[in-house]
Image (cartoon, rainbow over all chains, first blue to last red; front, side, top):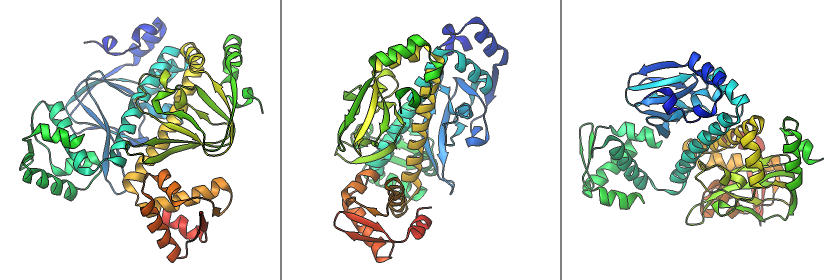
Length: 218
Length: 218
């Protein structure tokens, strides 16, 4: 799989633009846990995930987290280059959730191409609209859904991503994804366990009844 | 004030593009309370506010509301044309909060210009990034701020918009802006009144101590 295969508007760029990208493109491999982009202090560039998994989240002043969205193979991270748009007035942190290989297009290169290429600019629009949609989904979850439904939905999503119903995850991590506190999550998971929905063991949550979890999360 | 003065990338469009906009541009005057765009059922077009005030909000299945952002003179509403971007997967309602005069560029005209003009596409990017920033601000409010701080902040914002500390507003309306329930807002306002921050009367909230409200909302 080459960069050209993964970058959606490649064929709509002219040769000069293609060469400017190839001439500045970097490959990076990062370990699980690495911070790739730290809020508004960095302007790393446009990231294209070759393989692995990234998580975008925001941090409160008190250090609480909430996950905005995840990026998987072939996904593109726009906010690691958000300094190129002056209207982006918020700080997102990007962390590798798995060992990840990615390509980086430097911000100034992508910005110069976007300025002259309508296809690149419109592609960027669609990217931003996708992330915006994920954040709107999150707002709806936070505003209208109770925490039991959100925890049930999160466990099912994790099981789908990992391809297993035995999740190696701490209550603290779940709290950080959902913008909650560890105590709240522990209480909820114990309630789920008493209802026969999950089984809890050290550093592990096993889903026992995905059907009822799905009914709860809807 | 003409449309050309208010539309930021006007001078970066070519004559053909300018003519296509002028040939399809519509002027509209709507009354306070009118719904201009109803979620994903409409694709009204790009709205440019000449004068007045619009509110963008989302609705839960149960009919609860939360305000995403407001639009004032010279502001542009992108989501009334969101059908032109397939990645926009959420439904926003746009309502006139005051009698409003506006221009409408039909969706298909704006879309065709964006497809060929990098300046128009990049301008749309900046528009979307602005709205995205407002929604991120909202998420941070909802996630990390308690309701007393949000109500105090909302009252101060309203007073600034209306240019008066005597707000003609119902508790129901405040609840709809903040995604809360009327009962919660009434309880909070009574507490504010007992603290000497506001005075409540029928259909009216008068701010008595903006300094302490500001300290509370921070």
